[in-house]
Image (cartoon, rainbow, N blue to C red; front, top):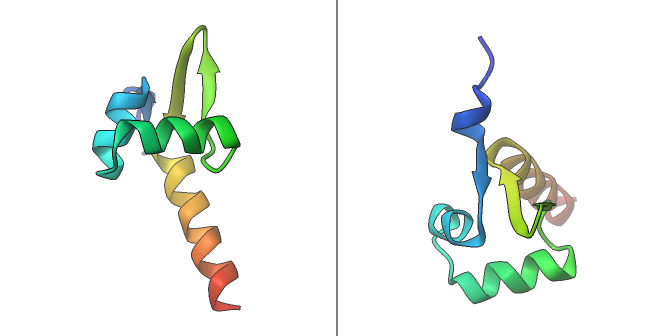
Length: 65
C-alpha cells in the first residue's frame, strides 16, 4: 500500500526544518533559492517527505559519479 498523503505532506517551514533537523532560517533560504523541492500552498511552504528524500538521494548519486 502507498504512503498516505497525511503522513507524507508537511506544511510550513518549521515542520520541514524540524524533520530535517536544520534551522528554520536555513530551510527558508534553501526554499527561496530552489535548493529544496518545496512548493507554496497559499502563503505557506510545503513539501513531501518522499520527494525531499528522493532529491537528497539524487544529490548523493550525482556526487558519487
